[in-house]
Length: 221
Image (cartoon, rainbow, N blue to C red):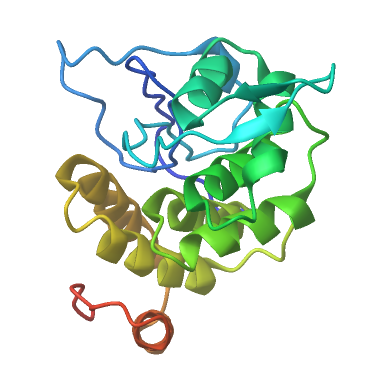
């Protein structure tokens, strides 16, 4: 039976794309603006959405359906996504993903994972999320943890989920709210693993971070 956590919560979009999984057991504090979003009613058990960091908003020039050039940067793409214009967002993301634009790769992977503006495609989701995670996009790493934890399109593997949560926490070192959610996810999953599997997951994450020339800030279990 696929593991399930105690409670499913959903976080809102605050003026931009809401996108990030977490499995923390405690609801958001009252007054923080969080509220349920119907667009996330069908997410896997244990998934929560949180605000994405506002950066990487440099503009890109792409062609529209009429062959005319238009400017659509990540700010515009995320606005389209937030408005539910998924097909438009996906079209422009495809035009810029893969061109050293990790945030576009991250969001495109999320959309393939959710089937938003594109047909749900676990292989494409993994492809783009892995590319974004390779350069330190914490949200992409967090989604990879959820994918392995839920077994959505891959063989369910809690150890691999823990590995990606360690990487997520490392990527979120300057983003305390999201880091806290990832840490809560990790705390929920670790008791499901034996000591050796916990240590192996940490060692795997540590090796991955070293291979990608990233400073390791997380500690072993």
